[in-house]
Figure 1: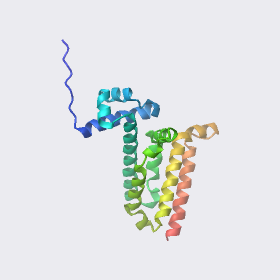
Figure 2: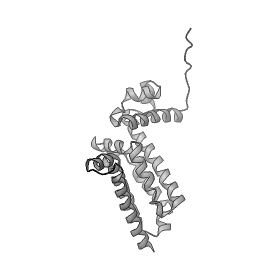
Figure 3: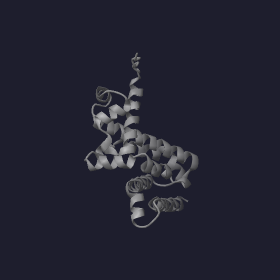
Figure 4: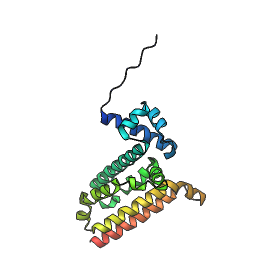
Length: 198
C-alpha cells in the first residue's frame, strides 16, 4: 500500500524562498538558460501555477533571484567592511567570490544580453547602502570616488567571473591569475584612496 504524500503548507515567504533557492541551484549548475518555468517548478517541488502565483512569470523569478543575490552580496560587503575596514577592499573579496561561484555574473550577463539589464534596479539602492555604512565618513573620501570604486569592483568581478579562468588558461597562465590581477588593481585603488584621505 502506498502512503499518500502529505502536502507541505508553507508561508508565502517560505514558498518564495524555496522557489528562489531552486532557481539559484539551477543557475549555478546549468547557467541562466536553465531558469525555465518547468525546470524551476520541478526543482522546487511545486507546480507551475505556484511559481506564477508568487512571481507572475519566469522573468519575475529571474528579477527576484538577481535582487536576492544582490542583497546577499551587499550584506556580505557591509559585514566585511565593518569587520575589516578599508584594507579589506570594502568587501571586494566577497564580491569576487559571489561573481565567480554563485552564478551572479552569468545571470547579470544574461539579463544584459537579453535586453533586461534594467531589471537590476536594486543595484543603485545597494550601492547607496554600502556608501552609507560609514565608508565616506570613516575613510574621508568623496562619495563619487567611492561609487566609482564600487563600479570598478563590480565590472572587474563580473569580468573575472565570466571569463577569468578561461582566458587565463588560454594565455598560458594559472586559472586564478585574472582574479589576482584584478585584486591587485583594487588594492592599488584602495592605497591611492587612503593616501588622498590622509
